Length: 277
Ligand SMILES: Nc1nc2c(ncn2[C@@H]2O[C@H](COP(=O)(O)OP(=O)(O)OP(=O)(O)O)[C@@H](O)[C@H]2O)c(=O)[nH]1
Ligand SMILES: [Mg+2]
Image 1 (tube, helix red, strand yellow):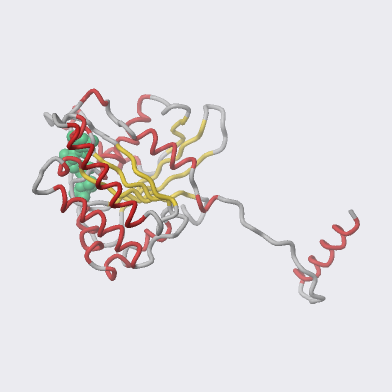
Image 2: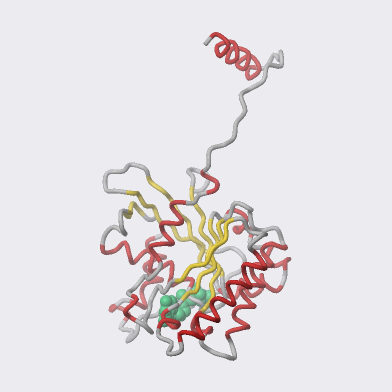
């Protein structure tokens, strides 16, 4: 598909259970009830894969609570999910996205070793990289700093192994942010968020040209006021708005060189025609 037409690759990265697959499943779910703002669903070549990921959240699964099954660890080559969208009902301009759905275990290997990180070759082609911070762990005093450190190490490893293009948009997302919204001591939570964001900005702000933070709760069971897909629409807007590989190529006009090849003769004709204008 990527050889046939331009596709934008979005990579979700983070530890086991931080909510990567759920975020992707909810992107798909949001389109089940109609357009997302002005964005319309225009097709999907991986419907069974999306349906499989949504199954445990549906009544058909007879699950009492919506859930997502663990993504199996199958080595460095991910499963891809495809989604095609268009802006506005009458538009004939389609945008194809490919999302990687990778097990958190794969990123555990990658954050501990640049050699392992280099095996994740799909990172090189990412237009967007989303690094997850798990707010569920952020509420647990004995886990919160190791959760932050793991995410930092992962990003550091991607940079140290040269696996991130400088054009890649990196978003560090506070995922499952319903845990923070439901917290009693909001001040402590906000102080933690500020502290972590300052730390990330100091470590990566200069090395990553396009760097931002975001908050999302794909399935906010802890604080249902947030509604399903909280913060996900903003992600979709970003993925549409920012496409580094989509910028026009900076092509110079051809230069005469008196060559005999067809391209050289074309250059002579092209420049002569321009001089006549
Ligand atoms: N409260 C809450 N729970 C969430 C949210 N997003 C996901 N979860 C739950 O978190 C658990 C893990 O979600 P997954 O999407 O499977 O996590 P993952 O990062 O894909 O995990 P691996 O595939 O094992 O790497 C599931 O039980 C989800 O229902 C959220 O926004 N809020
Ligand atoms: Mg998963």
